[in-house]
Each structure stands twice: as C-alpha cells, then as structure tokens.
Image (cartoon, rainbow, N blue to C red; front, side, top):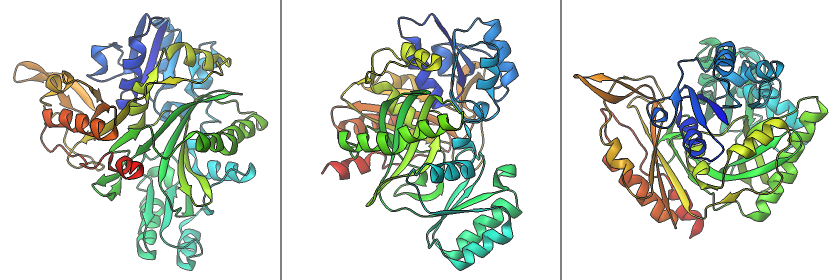
Length: 431
C-alpha cells in the first residue's frame, strides 16, 4: 500500500512514524512534511491546503490511501474531490467537517440531537454580542468562540465582562481571525476536568482510539493565552470503561446517527473535547481529525497495524473489533518558539535532536522544522510556533514524565519555550 499523509505537524509525523513501519505499507509520501518526516518518508512539495494540488500528487504517485492530518484541506473539500475521482481517502466530507469548521453548525447540530453541551447563544454582529455580554445571562467566566477556523486560537475564556467585551471587539471589529470571526458563539464556561476522546469512524460504526488530556494554555499552571496545545498525556486516568461507554452511547453514536439523518456520512478520525461536569460529560468542541499534540501520545500506544484499519474505515467497512493498546503511559511536551502563540522568529538551528532520539523510551516528533544549510552544513532549524513534541514512555505517569523531560533536556534552540508541568494532572488524578 502506498500512503499519502497530508500535513506537516507533529500529528502527521506520529502517523507517518506508525504507518511507515507496517508490513502492508510499501511507501509513505508526505505533503509537505517536515524534517523529521523526511527520515521516514518521501516529501512532496504540495500545499496541504490546496485540494487540487493534493489530487494531482495522489494521481501522479499512484497513491492507494490518503490520510488527511489538518482541518484546512477538509474544510476546503479535499475528501469530496478525491471521492469524485474514485480515490480512497480518510476524512469527512466538507459538509460533515463543519462539526469543527463552524462552531455555530456544531452547536446547532448538538441541540437538534440532544448531545450534551454548554448553554450558548449565536451572535451575528458585534452589537448583539456586546448586548449579550452586558446582560451577563450566561454568567462569567464566559467563553467567546470565533465561528470558523482560527488555528486553535479563536477561543477566549473571559473571566469578566471587560475581557469578554475585548474578545468580541478583537474578533468582530478588528477581524483578528478574518472571516472566522464574522459570527461568534458565546457560551457558559463548564466546570470540571477536560479530556479528549478519539474514535475511528466508517460512516456507520465507531471504534474508540483512546483518551488523552491536553494542555492548552501557554504557561505552567494553565496560565496565559490559549494555544494549539503545549503538551498532552495518555491515557487519561479519568476515562474508565464505564465512562467510555457513556461517551460512546450519549455522544459519539448520536453524532454519527445525526449526520446520517442529514445525509452526511462521516468516515475518519473524530475527536471530542469533553468537560467532565457533575452532570456528566459535555462536549466543548469537536475536531474532525486527530488531535495535536494528542496524536503524538495516543498513536504510539496502538498495538498492531493501523493502515488496514484506516483503509477499511475509508471504504466504509471498519472492523468493529476494539483496538489493542500498549499498557504504558505516554507524556508529550511541546517545545515552542519564544513568542508562541504569537508569530516569532524562524530559521533557528535546533541542537540535540540525535542525542534525545537515542534515549530509551523517548520519541521526538517534529512539527515546525525544516532542513537548510547553516554555516556550510545541513541543519534542522525552526519553521514556526510549535517546533517539536518530545514523548516519554513509562510504566507509570511518573516514569513517562521523567523520560519526556530527559529528552527535553537534550534539545535546545534560541528562545525555546515549554511548560514544565505536563503530566502533573495525571499524578493528581491517580493519587
């Protein structure tokens, strides 16, 4: 099987790492890929956000299965285009991808099908949004969400009225998120621990892929601005067999049934971001692809080949048998550029990658990296905000945390920013 992996982040590196070593996989091609993926697969200089370029690449390379990592090509209809040409691809259609790509669609969909979520209001203009904030009917903290895609940065948890007003102004008046902020969802702030839950779907069935807990805030102690994710650990100690069953029966399966009722067949990874409230799990958001950085800690736990399972899901004939998972704990620490989540300098040489990679029970997944010539020698350099995810594996969370930060200690680049408390929530939950 020849597989095309679309994307260039840590999630795509983790998927490439898994697929490239499997018996049924002849070759993995990555578009556009990164410096870490280049050690496992062949890179193709195609724009991940250009469905036509991806189609041309798949045809030229005689690809048997395309796996879409990020949300942008899904929002632009890459699955619709491939299926129209008879090419096998894993991912939801453009219409089904609205579960992530439009917060308004997702909230209205959940309301229609009784899927538990936070109370909310949809605001079509800044006047109505400011009036809703002023009335305070949803309370404070108040969650302000841009409707469209904003690279994981379109959500503000406003502790008070003034901060909420500023968030509305930034999105709707300043257009900080472009067209993504034309509409807003304002919703009550749910209370409880947050977990991520993943399934693989074939349109009718869904098989759990495990759970994780992400760390969205930029600084230790969940302080600072929201980011795309500063680290994660898996599995979540909060998700036992009973809770998994409730999530499947009350959230995942109703989603698939509702989509089918509306003529939207969903084939691909589905990620439910959940708050475990005193009333039970409630949906914060859906992602229509694997999470990042969660994939970096969940994918290495899969015991057995992934390629045949995702190919079957893409064909609508997913094997309903549960996945097998390795029993070890996984903790991933993101190494980011100094200004992240704001734009920062790129092209900074990264030191210590080989040293970290030689450590036992340490995996290094690349995200914003590339190779270029520095002082006459080939070097791996930074190419964006989230640069690497260093994953530690261990029999306990303590062991996995120690291995992850041992790997981190080997690596350096100018302005390297990280959190030092990734995995601490797992220790609290297991005491």
